[in-house]
Image (cartoon, rainbow, N blue to C red; front, side, top):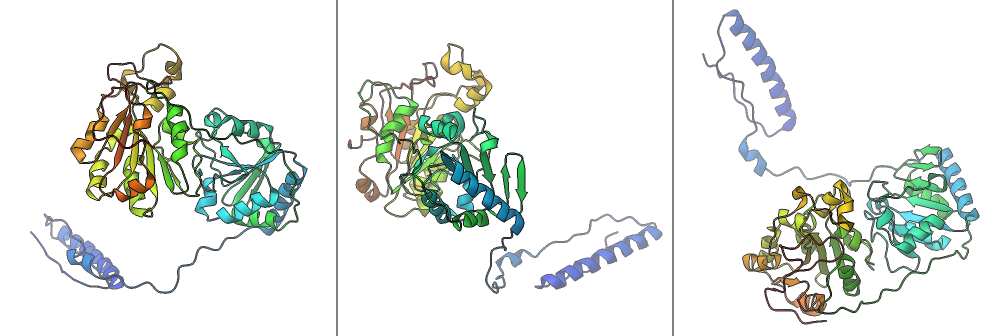
Length: 447
C-alpha cells in the first residue's frame, strides 16, 4: 500500500522548517494508524530541496561585518606587561621569535615597531617565514631546531630572554632542539606562558600594545653578525647538492620573487633563503602534505602581480602525486618555475624511519624508493618547457631561470627544472645528486 500524504513548495526557509516539522508529525500519526490497521508501509518518506533552488538569488547581506571584540583580563595583562618589560630591561642578549599568528592576526606592523623600538634581533619559523621583511638589519634567520643556520642556533643558545610572539611549537620548529622554558615567554592568541606561570585571557595584540606603551629605552645589544651571501663558483662537472642549489638560487630571490617549498627535504634548503618582501614565502608546514607546492603554484600565479615571479621547490615523490597541475598551468598560460629535486626516494619518510641510511652504506627502504621518471620530458606531454641538470650537463648554470624581464614577457611557457640522477644509481640523498646529461627543450640563456 502506497500513500502520498502531500507535496509542498516554498521559497521561505522559515516556512519550510514549519512544513517539515508538520509533515514529520503527520508521518508519525500515519504510521500509528497503519500499525492499528495492521498494514505495512512499503515506501520511505521522501524529503528534498527542489533542484532549481540552487539558482535562486540569495538575500543581499545587511550591515557591515565586524571582527569579534578582543577581550583581555586587565589585571593579568598589566602583570604580564610589567614582567616582560622587566625581563627585556634586565637581559643582556634578548631575542624575539615571531610566529605565524602575527600574520594571521594582522600584527606585522605592530610587531615590527616593537622590534625596532627595542633594537633586538628577531627570528621567525618555517610557518612564519617572510612574515616580516628578511632584509631587515635585525633579522637573523628562521629558527627550526637543527635545520636552523649556525648564527640562528648560536643566538638562541646565547639569548638570556626570548620573547615568543604567536609561535606554534611543533615537532618541526623544535626539531632536535629543546627550548629553555625558564628563559622563554610564549605569547599566543590569548594566553602567555613563562616558566611555570600561565596567564589566560591576554590577547596577543594587547600584550604587544602594552609593551609598546612602556618607556623602554633601546640599548646596543650584542647583535650577531649576519653572514653575507656570495654566489658560489659552479663547475660543469660539479655534482648537484641540496644546499648547493639553494646557495646558487639565492641571487635570483629579490623583492619581486615568491618562493614556495613542498613538505620535503626542500624545507631545510628553502628555510635558509632570504626572502626580502614580506608575505612572499608559501609553505604548508602545518599539515605537511607532500605534493602540495606544485599545484599551489597555480593559485599563486593567478593571484600574483604581473611583475612578480613564482619559484617553487618540490621533491620528486610529492611531484609524482600532483604532476597533472602542469596541464592547468600550461592551459592558462601561467609561468611558475618548478624545481623538481630528484633523488629517487621519499627522503623525509626514510629519514623518519631510519636516518642513518643517509650517512652509511645501508640500503634505502624499498617502500621509500620511487619508480624513476624522466621529469624534464613531461614538458613534451603537457606543452611546457623542461630542462634536466646534473653531473655531465653544463651544470646548473645552463638551467637557471632566465632574466625576469624576459620571463614575464613569455606568457605561454613555464620553466621546469629537474635536478636528478640516473635511475640505476643509488639514491643520491647523501649530499650529491647526479643525473643524466639529457635535457629537453631549448636551453635558456645563462644569466
